[in-house]
Amino acid sequence: MAKSQWSFKTAVELSAALAAKKVSAVELAEDAIGRIERHDAKINAICVRDFERGLAAARAADAELARGVRKPLLGIPLTVKESYNIAGLPTTWGIPAQKDFRPVEDALSITRVKDAGGVIIGKTNVPFGLGDWQSYNEIYGTTNNPFDLGRTPGGSSGGSSAALAAGYGPLSLGSDIGGSLRVPAFHCGVYAHKPTFALVPGRGHTPPPFQPLPIDRDLAVIGPMARSAADLSLLLDTIAGPDPLEAGKGYRLALPAPRHTTLNDFRVLVVDTDPVMPTDEVVRGTIHKLAANLEKAGVKIDRESPLLPNFADTSRLYMRMLMSFLGASFTPDVYEGAQAAVAVLPASETSLAAERLRGIAQSHRNWLMDDGARGRLRAQWRELFKTYDAVICPIMPTPAYPHDHSDDQEQRRIRIDGKDHVYPDMLSWPGIATLPGLPSTAIPTGFSPNGLPIGVQIVGPWLEDRTPLKLAELIEREFGGFKPPSMFDD
Image 1 (cartoon, rainbow, N blue to C red):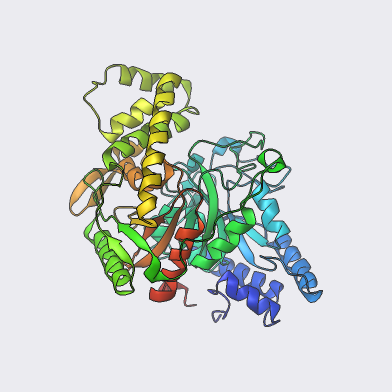
Image 2: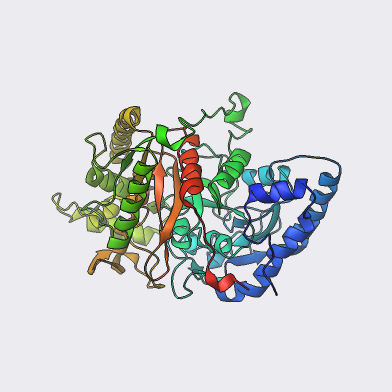
């Protein structure tokens, strides 16, 4: 079957085509569904299909379009990470004990997508408990990278990134606490945006079987994924804003405009590596090339600055705070084992692995001390953004690597320029934006010599999400963006 002309169009382009009656919402849904049926046996990105309800939503969208109704996502097919509650569909987070859990109401973000006319056709695969940069679990199996089926698509929103790369609709929803939006975008050559902390309410993005209460889970955010930068803004504007059950009673969202609208007005700090978590030659090379191209386009580029917070200190702090949050759900025996290990850990041991261990067993008193340090870190970033509009830096130190499903992630190793590094230490680069809660936009920048996608993240100021998003749009317009995998030429 020949590839449809619509398969890899952006949501913005599809909206224009729908308005001009060049295509129908049903045709777009059928195109995405057809691609899933042809290709997903190899990729396994869509773990829960919802084709019947998706087609019904598309028919309803066509009826609204015929009446002249205009909504931001009207008639656009999209996918959603498995971890979002959708009434009647499984929400398992890849946890076998929860394989039969079905929520009775939609997550708030899902309601907003549906109200905006979005056509949800399925849910995308995740790792167990959303806790890996690979996407596999006992319920749904393994998701493969569309650019190399033997490699990870990233995680934990790996099903979403693979779905986007394969042409299963132009948009998806993911989540991020340790890079789970940005890492899969990096590994599959697509775009993602980690919003400012708490910009998008998380109600209904809840581990099963817990109630979908409005709550800010420390460090964690939900956000958009797409094949173009402009589409990120479209989806973010749909789901952002306070939860009407709480802050929405008194507050409304009013994000500031981007600081600039042309490339040559931006001033950007570029970081390519750090001894704490070195990047490989390919990643450094793409950052150097991007920086050089931006300079030619008139962007003011600095490659070092004393204003940048100390990467080693913030990485250690992030490891403690992340594992303090995640460790709260560990079983008693794991928690007690961590306590025993920390008790004999010398104070001089400051490896990132040691800090992760300390985080699991951390007291509330020590957590409050760390939270104070995070407040001081945010002040440092505020000072930096008086001089710079954005920071461009790595997302991960190396392109997608072969699947590794060994149980103990602390024992996994990633090879960077011929040297092995501890797998979870790679959290450092996503953590640069996660710990202070800053917005960060992941963009593709090209390919490694063996054809694997690579990219960077653009970190912006607190609640100035439109600034990194605009810079991402300008870079895409100037230098190009997503390119589909060759295996999907149909």
